[in-house]
Amino acid sequence: MLAADGLFGKLDAGITFVILYSMKTAISLPDDLFESAEKLAERLGVSRSQLFATALAAFIAQHDRATTTARLNTVYATAVSDPVDQGIATLQTLSLGHDSW
Image (cartoon, rainbow, N blue to C red; front, side, top):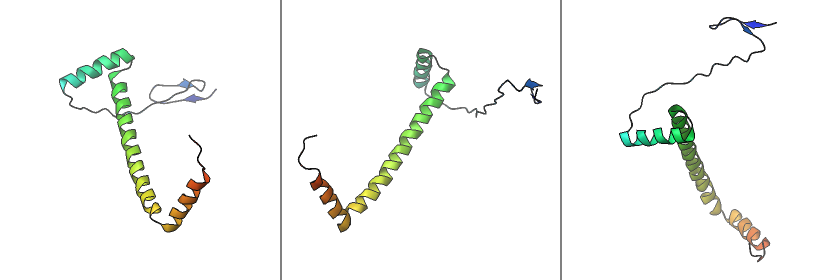
């Protein structure tokens, strides 16, 4: 049987040994925001750390989507000004007919 030596001694190969690294950080929050976070974490049944990590991940994703949307808007804004693209867009619109969606 294989064994892994490490900080925790020998482990049988049948045991999955995983160390998840996380960064500890200190932040300052207004008291009312901290209390709201405490209540929400308790209501959701998650730790305060998990609540903050989830909230930060959602915030980052929202801003990433906003950046992507802004870039796509720039691309499509310049594409519409091209006469060939305008012609293709007109033909696509005409091909749809007058069906109500």
